[in-house]
Image (cartoon, rainbow, N blue to C red; front, side, top):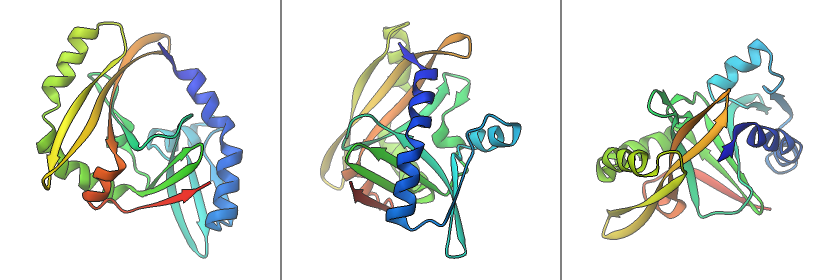
Length: 195
């Protein structure tokens, strides 16, 4: 079972590394983090904005995701509390998603990511598969592979049910992992920084 508080602690520990990346690699001049737990910061957190970056007269609201291992896919949370609460992917008001992995950082334009997902959605047929995951796994976590054929190419995505504990209860999140090669095919605007 996934413990939300452990993930939250891990993400907060990564902020020093992330800030160094923003300053040294991206050239950010000012960083404002929304992680104090204050009412104001929680408003930003509910909008999936972890940090605001300022440089050269411009600013960006950024959603940060941290992974402990390097993967060749991007994990999008579809439901944060299944079935009632949409995941961060649908609620995010950030302009960019920055996904940190041990040896690479992916800087992704959220608008193009949403457009790509909406283009992909008719090919996924995931609602029956979500119901199957929920019914078959009960209180367990698990995944199923979703084959996708686009442009005479085959891609594999994973639909993931994670059983979590936090907020004083147990709950399920539903996510989909989409290969970066598929996102590139769909025209998602992203930059990759090797660390």
